[in-house]
Image (cartoon, rainbow, N blue to C red; front, side, top):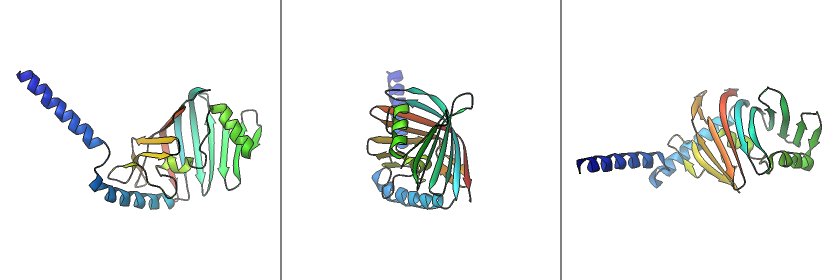
Length: 202
């Protein structure tokens, strides 16, 4: 009987701890949103950023693990997808001039064709317009994340069919940035384990 009471008490403690780690209570939402906006403003200050990560992709057509080198400058992004041997197998550029993709054979594709190439390689449509904001832990323009922590850092955001969840935050130049980013939809999943962040202009 005493053992049963101890187990019950232990279970209650564990459940209470899990509840504390879950979505914030409604009374904290306003403060969390204010912290999120402050964080978003701080992330608008750097002239650019760089990220290096390991990426695991699961899709209906293709699955595997690659390394990602990502450089963001102003309104432009350059993503180099590398195999385990360090060779660039795909380069993605996105900016005011649209989307450009170059494969391992040096063939370059632009616009709608580039989107088709990406979709054919991965088996699902890549949300290139939102990628840079999601990487930083920012929702699409004009939207707020579904779940925030008390630092104003998102734990979950949604956009169309996509759900993005975050973890392993670390401070970079005084700003909380995610180290574990998961994107999933009904037919696809990708996980980024960030090895290095570099904020420029801070």
